[in-house]
Length: 193
Image (cartoon, rainbow, N blue to C red; front, top):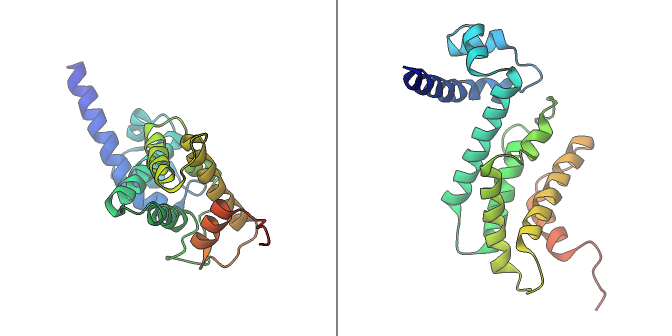
């Protein structure tokens, strides 16, 4: 009986996460209320707390779901060209966090868990994203003494910096992908030849 209850709870958890996605997409974490989530899920507040220990846990599950979706998009659009694949990575990353193609006047910055979106390091999906980036740098940069894992982490953090910078002082995002890649791959200071 215990295994059946456990399986039922796993299914409920998965369904509740999927059904809460549109709510969190619109409301964010800061303005989310468990009683509103319960209404959206057509369940009780107590049921939500039985499955998720807190609103934070439900929201982190939401973020993990979004990262899996992000990874699926990368794999679906992946090409044989590593530079194009880095562009695809940045397109989806910036589209989600800065909402380049959706609502230019309202970035997702109103919730205190914003940086969890940038850095959920204890979940395997993050490693999968790093592996994707490593593969691109292995094809793009031929250097025997470089750690491609290191490059992947630096690239992720570098692009995170563009998002943080945008939050502090919004800027034109039309060419953000090109600017990110040029600055990362070429550096700021170029030798005058």
